[in-house]
Length: 305
Length: 249
Image (cartoon, rainbow over the protein chains, first blue to last red):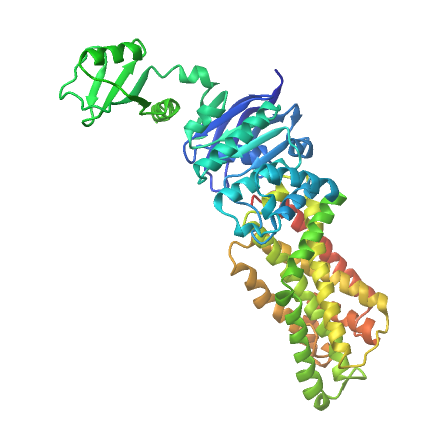
């Protein structure tokens, strides 16, 4: 599989001497859906800023689909579409004009840009609002506008910096569906997010950044397999017995109808349900009390401190 | 590259055209007042300057003053706002060279300078009869002046961190330079010391040559004015390019 993005020894020290990146190595394959995770200030936005040419690197090298970013700046910029974390459009410009102007910056003629803008605005459900000023859009609509703008020049790599921050559940799911579709069509997507469930759901590979360093880089599957403990909430429509005991798993009665069960990897859910059944507990609903990636993320980032 | 440049220029022109009540209209009112008060009312008592009646004498300077202010204001406001709302990133992530960005914004400033200068000239033509002595000189000086102050506004915007920073230079540097550049008077009526000081003010060369184009009278050589203005433009353009390349927005 060819490499879409290859970063070696990337360092960034800001003018105020803040060392944001301390030698980052990353490899993202072509067609991958890649999560770049990290706490606030870990260096995710700095990495993205350098890849996209918004920030200057202190040292290190970046290759995008084989092009060296330092020597082929414009070729690299054409290959990347960026949807940033902050709203970064002129709020006093009409929506369609924002897209057409962006296409113009990439050297796309207005006639062609109008066709592409129509396709994208319909895809993100903003076509009816194309003549409205951007300031009149809701937060979710602004996010979708930035997504459409990032795609106007048909990039090979899409970089999303917290694309669903502050977006309601319905729109979040529609964005996820759209991103999955783009990825299935062959687009490489790099995602940073604080919603770890989002990364777990969408991404195949992951890197975790902490204090300017990559502390973990692997496939999502391999990473999640490291979680050897699960916390489940079991709910019963009937009243639970006052005392529930087990020597094979931890069990805590939360209220008259719910239990919290902590399972290690050596015990199956079937045996837990069987054990509870013998004590007169009828389980009607089961759901996870934790996000596996979140558990691991907290463990890894805390371990580094 | 041409499409990118055209996009920036059209965007800039649309920006100031949409808010014409704030950008185009006020200078026309202000200039008409200048002419009414300084030219029409006080001018008769002042008499001639360089053999030209005072009302006609101040017309070139007053037009140029609006060109200076509007070219400067357009780039400083537009680029600072792009920094402020981060929309400058739209340009920086795209394959647009720094020269094209600079040229696009400067062309925006020149367009506004031209629009306002033309608007003021048309408004004046309703009240005063005036003829242009040499159209080519008028155009060259307009163009150089507009480019120079668009570049200056661009540099101001790069350095500016707040809205205060974009009004300090126009208020405390640009306005005194403009008024002391001979818009309302012939520099030769000043004492020798202040005449010499005036020669360090680039606006003096602009106004003097613009007046040459309009009225056919001047106090300095035209080629010296061109040399001074071109030198400043080259220095400012190189400095603006360097800042654009070096700064992180």
